[in-house]
Image 1 (tube, rainbow, N blue to C red):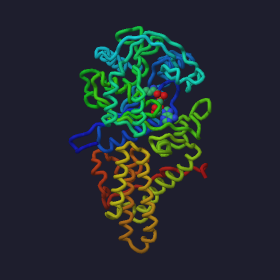
Image 2: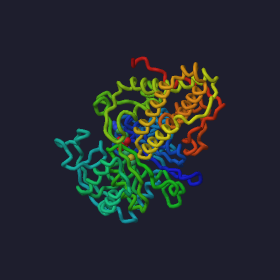
Image 3: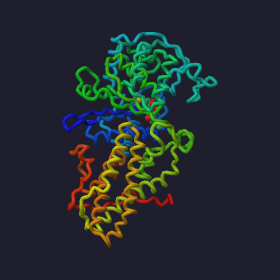
Image 4: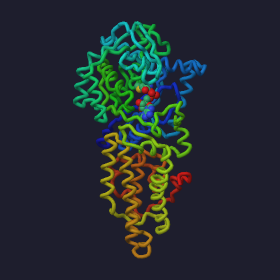
Length: 509
Ligand code: ME8
């Protein structure tokens, strides 16, 4: 968090890099939108933010998908990776960088990492025999199989025996367990932390860092017949995006990552393999790893075969980017599993956005226009206490990465403002008490300013529209303390009429 104007804090946030074997769906969008909300929030409070996302492009799964599409792996990756960038543009994702594992900067970085791991003695040569599932891109144990098949992909794993290089995970486990236990590396939410600590109790094997049988990957710098195991390749992106090398300025400035965000499916790789690799490299460990829940669509797992594969593009076309961001994040608490009921989206859009934010904004701006010719009429502190409390809830939520609770705080602010209108009845004051009317309108306008600032991370477009109606669209030169202070609007300044922020959807009625 920014400490004062001179000392700027940094905030390095990452999403997983997504597999390019298929186009993006709303599961990917969910993580990326949440990361964007946190990145934008940290920019709002004055931090220097590096927000990284990207695509994971190596491995046999992707080579197979390319073959099916009758393309070279590289052509296939280029095509699908572009679909991810496009989806993020459509959703107003403000990532500072987009890394692809087929880029030269990544390949160079991974080779550096592998060389360093080898030199440190963390990598040794061995033989691997096992049952490999191409869908999972990992070896499965006999115990995991159901009727001899992978429980996720329902296919028989291949029996593979090959020369491999291994990472000496066991050596790092005691130190890592202690660090997780003592929250030196925070794993959130707490139940996930407990799950990870449970894994130490079960015991873990070393993992292989290379594959002989896979061809589509980064060759090991010390053995060209092997390619880097996809997870070693993929996890390294968090460092290669910082131009991982001795003299890298970016590395010095942004490492360690402040937050690796993902769903629970890949927590083990991030909470165990990755920190152990970093220890071997002599690098600091990420400060926080947050694994949110997995969601189902209308009670079913999302999959193409069930016909419920939701493309974020279709949702944006129907509701607009701001609304999709809001609707996806407000379905259930951030961190637990949940069900997304698409049928409720239009209803919630109308109640929270058209009637809630949209209606409040247009009502207040219409009253300034009607009663005061579009000029801020007075200055008053009538709602400053309430707004201060909401800021506290909102900032606490953001500090704990609870984007859902930040949205909850915003909702509360809207209901305070709606209640204030109902109690004070400006249309009656207009006939009886001009002085009080001016104060009431001022307080409502000032609430709109605070509301728009809080909305900026979640719904950047609507936030900008409200701020520009208030003549406050350029807020980047102000500190969060200045922005939060009650009284940012000055009596006598002009306010514009607002365009309709969220037109009502008729089909929901
Ligand atoms: O695992 N609910 O990529 P991936 C919530 N390349 N989040 C979901 C979701 C759902 N139903 N489905 C997907 C990989 N996600 C690796 C990562 S990182 C170094 C390498 C999101 O394309 C969620 O963030 O399978 C999950 O962790 C991620 O997509 C998995 O993406």
